[in-house]
Length: 349
Image (cartoon, rainbow, N blue to C red; front, side, top):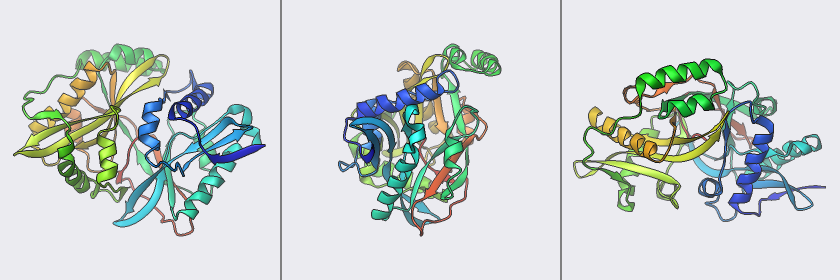
C-alpha cells in the first residue's frame, strides 16, 4: 500500500532518487539536472519540519517525491504565501498506481492547512520528451504565469558541443564558441571581492529594489537572503564596492547536467547591478564568469526575469534562447490569486 508522508531521509537520498528517476525517463533524450545532496540541503531543508517536503513510500521504500519549500511572494504589491519546487519524481514502475495524483492532493491539503495559496514551478516546452506538461496542464487548478527564457554564455564550447543533442545546436555552438572564446577577466578588479556577512544589509536593499520591478515574485528578508548568498559552500556571491558600500552583486552556484555527455554549469540566481556604472557592472559580471571558468564550468546560465540588464548580458557574451520555459502556479486554495505576467522575479528551479 502506498503511504504519503513527510520525507524522513537525508538530502543525499532524495537527490539520488530524483536524479535516477529523471535519468530513467529522459537520459539520451533531453538535458537532465544531476541533483546532489548539498544542493538539495541548501534548497529544500531550511525548515526543520520539512512540512512541504513530501514523499511516497511502499513498505518503507521511497517511490515518489514532491518536495517544495515555503516562499513569500508578492503579486502586484500584495503578499502571497506559496511554495516552489522542481523535483517532482515518481518511480516509473509506480505510474499506474496513482502516486503522482496522491502526492499532488497531499501537497494541496498541506497548503490549505498552512494557508499557503500557490505552488510554483516550471514546464519545459522546448523538449519534446518532457512529460511534465502532459500531467500538470491537465489540472484545472494550474495556471500559466508566463513564458521565460534562458540566457547562456559559453565557456568551453567543445564540451557544450559534445553535450548537445541536436546536430544544428552542435554546429552553432562550435561556430559561436570559436568566435567568442572564453570569458575575459575584468578590466578593473579593484573592490570586486567575495561576499561577507557584513554585506547583507546592502545586498538586501539592492535586491528589494530590483524585485519591486516585477509584478510577481519572491519577497526577500534577512534570513532567506542570508541562506541564498552563503550556505555551506554551495552558493557563491561576488560583490562590487561602490563609494564605500556594496553597489552590486552576482550570486551563483555550480551544478552538473547530463546531455550526450556531462557538463558543469554556473547557474546565476541573482544579478543586481542597477546602482553600478555600466563599466563597473561589466567588470563584476566578468569576474563572476572568470571564477566559473576557473572552477571548471563549461557554460553560464541565467534566467531572464524582470529588471535584468539585457545590454550588459549581451556585452559579456550571453545569448538569449527562445522562451520555452513556462512558469506555472498551481492554485492550492480557493482564495489563490489569478496570476498572469512576464514580469517575474524567480529562481531557476
